[in-house]
Length: 308
Image (tube, rainbow, N blue to C red):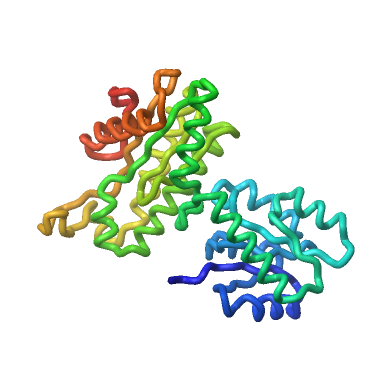
């Protein structure tokens, strides 16, 4: 089993060395020497936890923490802030900016390991994040939709699925498939940032299935944005010769060689106007609408049995 990844960020080489030595027997450890490099490394290696020095060049720990918390993809990433001895205000500001815990320098390796284990355990318990995209998983999705049903609020649920993804995954391999899933997550996040509201929710059911919960008034614009962005970016995931042909040749589920077009995306929009009693009914309607969308080639949106 792969060990969890921890990113440690400090501009002091001595502290970095101590942290790496203390953690490397138990975790995969990455390092960064300033705030800007930290942001790049977080997006690159997708760590399970970040240990972040408060005072650094380019971007300090508080700035990095706030930037991470403003990115839905890393909203729930656990962060431990390193502060100097007696710097109470730094501890308070670090926690206010979104850190989950803090450690005072100098520290004992045993305390560091205990804090790391505690934060990782708490994070795992509190969030069923998808390990690939770090988006909330099924428990969080059910909780979010149930809460809205109980509050009698009208909302829309977008059920999103990739078409012909298995063929792409079989043909190009899991690494390329994972990259496409992560790009899809980024597109969905961007759609919320540009077309949605601050109360919107994004969940990753698993594989190539996602859910967005938003206002009824914004659902169509979000869906249209996702389709436009996805269709623009999908050709870049294909090799030049396949891009020129516009398809790939690979085995279907029956083991026969078949021509598969580029991966497309199907979206079913379920409008919830106090006409559903349970999250299962909404998911069933979403699956039905997605199935209808998949009957026509290419990316498309289906809303309450009507093709948009």
